[in-house]
Image (cartoon, rainbow, N blue to C red):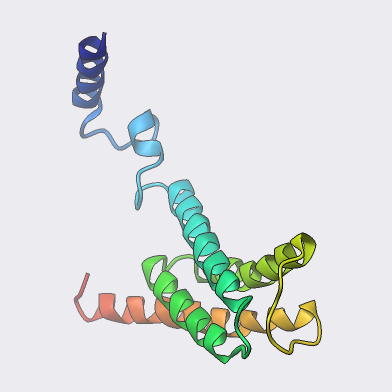
Length: 147
């Protein structure tokens, strides 16, 4: 049974190899060829990164480290996805307040001296700067002849 399934999969791959018109199932979600796959992977990676940073921010007494990590991670993802720096910045910048909101609803302890939940939106600034800087640097590297 498994041999027949593998044989059918190999035959399907042989028949569809080399066709990139976007109509077959093999090219719909290929990274770099499909806009939908790029946006989905950009949002998923940004959400994961933002929630990890937000979880780390729950134990931080000062927001300085969190803001620097937001800047660096959004610059990295902005360079990876140079077409979507605003998506990267918005998702990473809003994931930190969402992590704080989730902590508040679950009753988890939050360290630091932040006066209220709106203070966590300060992360949008470094996220925007980092994502656009990463996108710009990726464009400059491409102009100089790098990949």
